[in-house]
Amino acid sequence: MKLFSLALASVLAASAAAQLNSDYTPTGPFALKDGDRVVFYGDSITEQRLYSAFTEAFVLTRFPKLKVSFVHSGVGGDRVTGGWMGDIATRLTKDVVAYKPTVVTIMLGMNDASYRPFDQGLFDTYRTGYESIVGNLKSRLPGVRFTLIRPSPYDDVTRPLSFDGGYNAVLLRYSDAVSAIAAKNGATVADLNAPVVQMLEKANATNPENAQKIIPDRVHPGAQGHLIMAEGLLKAWNAPSIVSAVSVDAASSKVTGQTNTQTSGLASDGKGGFTWTQKDAALPFPIDLDDPVTRLTMDSSDFFSALNRQMLTVTGLPVDKTYALKMESLTPMKFAGVGPAPTFTGAQLAAGVNLAPLKTPMWSQAREVFRIMNQHLELHQLRWRNIDFSFQNEAAGTKERDALIRSFDAYEKKQFEAAQATAQPVAYRYTLTAQP
Image (tube, rainbow, N blue to C red; front, side, top):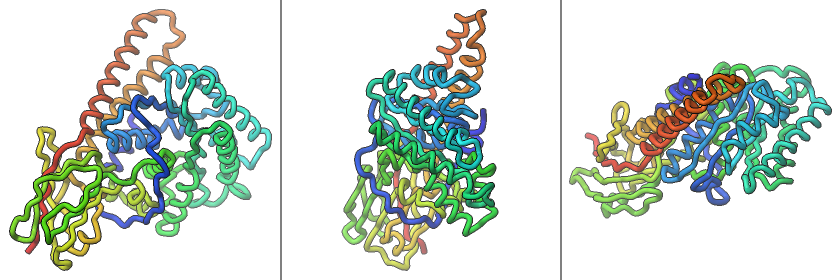
């Protein structure tokens, strides 16, 4: 399946853009830890492998030393009772428990409410079934940590309501049930509804035509909507906002501050500029702001200010002078920026510039991580759907089928390890040059 790769290609480039300020502050350490195995469980919105894949990619690029594995187990049409790939007992056994996860995320509800006004019977089935899922997994996976997801919205913002009150109002009642189940079980809650609605409202006020493209069928978000969903999940996990931060004082030619990076060799070029070496411990999340729908989505959200800050501050420069910033890889693993070197005024540098939206070599490195990561997703999907599920009832060739599954698993593991290797910190040479 190429859905993720096509969507990924549409969001992996960068340019500067206005961003909303964020009041997000992590309230504790990041939720995932070394050795965690995460299963994303859900319906067709999870099957899209977008919010879940963006979350995985964020973890790979922001925490390159962290050893965490991910399995994407979404199936279109699923409800709390299961679906076409098996009843709920089968689904949980084969697509969750079999992977021995330490962390399970669950997003269900879009199908359970049946796209109609609130129905008490359907709601009771959902609440009881959801509680049963959590209880089943708690008993079979001792110590498992849950993130229960308030389901993503039905788009009642950019189009007229289908009935009085709208379908998303129904989903919010289901979401409240999820929150209550989470509180009862000591689980984390991730809200993937309200942030998307808030973004849609801002986008619709700016550009109604492009706003409709964010959730084209009102149910399944495009990549842009999934970015905001991933942001909601990552915030629930206390994801850090900082990729790296460096402060330089031009007057003293000294690095006065650095966060999540190592700098060395700062030197003046004698012409008002500087060079230094910088090795960040993380990579930015690269997003294509040249795409108008993506730009609208980002401009209507706080994604960059909340989760994607790669900051450079240089004080003591003439405020009206212009400077070009060039970055070059210093290791055999060479990545290059795209397009001309970005330029900033002394005033902008003094205020601090966010490099994350730019097509830097670090952007190129992150893009390569995503490309390789996508291969492991594709391999798992083929193994799961085309081999394991499709041939599960065939008596002939069982031994060969199982051997093929093991081969797919081994190849997938190699691709995931290759993505992790590509995400490892690389030193770059920064050159800040005063322009005529």
